[in-house]
Picture 1 (tube, rainbow, N blue to C red):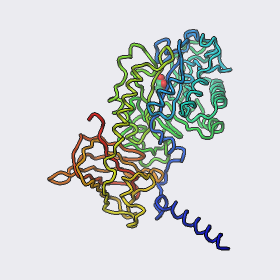
Picture 2: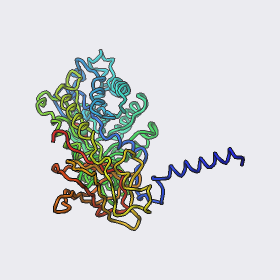
Picture 3: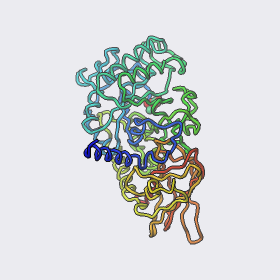
Picture 4: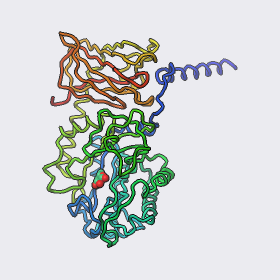
Length: 488
Ligand code: FUL
């Protein structure tokens, strides 16, 4: 080895050492169940949007029966660019479109059905709203998601094996003709009454067996290897068991897929996850900005307020899940002005609230720090560097982390994060603030995960501490932030 090779070799060693510095040093043992890199990237989006738009928009229904004439579908001024712009301005990173809802009407000209946009007056039958949607999302830097309802109240074969073949052919169309699709959304509503090609009857299916989901999932991933699949049972993203946008407390990303059946799952189980769960499936909280999923003029006065949306954000993103917020276009094919103004104020509320982290610059001490090493210093919890984080020694199950900002501060939001690439570990914690008479408990909580936002009545204090009471593995934390809700 000559001198240049030696220097190069030493530099590589040094770099490898630096890279290891915080992330993998000192043998922190990951939990048995951890997220994939794709799941972490998905969760980092935090806020994604839903577009419910179809024939229901024109009939006033929430669930079309399947007998609606395509001639009813005629938006007067559709602009998918407006949807994407509004979503981007609200901070959404992805938009999901109902390519087909339960009534079976397809927003793209599917070669496998006549019940589609080709037979509507829109653009003289030459329209393709999936195409317009996908192009607009890309123009505004949003990822693309598509919803293809498994339940089809129009199709004559629904309930028979032939329909599954048809359903998969439609999936292939969507997943091969529109470029990269980031998410496919499989809802759980299943069977019941419908038009079914004129049969006009009730059709019951067994949600555990009818759809052959495992084969469908394999098909989806073979066509789009980078896609994330949402359903009651993941495999990548899961329903949280309600449509109010509320993850449970506790909320574990871990759960047992074996216990989940798409369309027939225990909603309470979905809502909390399972600390013993063998699968990591990210929670996604779906909720509409209006009472309905589709636009109805009579709900114009019932658009959720910025404060309501903020509360939902705290109970979804702030409970270790992703928020999927529905913003349904109206009969023009535009997101309504009222929804836009509420969204704008919601975004401002978030931006103002999270602009100033009062914990920045505080002196941070911990009752125990892994190996006593600087690499895991609790000071890393309040710096700008996401790669620096604190961990305790393996022998330690409980710990106290104290923040001293050297001045008084007033806050009502506490942000906590675990380095989830090592799994979800903390299951009980307490937040305390300092008063003259001593440490006062302000909140007792359960899980943390990717992000926990705790809201307490605003408190003015000169010191703050977090007491970690229970964890299923060595406790580790990547962030503590303190904020004051704007307007509070
Ligand atoms: C459910 C559907 O039944 C609703 O109409 C809506 O699309 C919601 C997001 O998913 O399963």
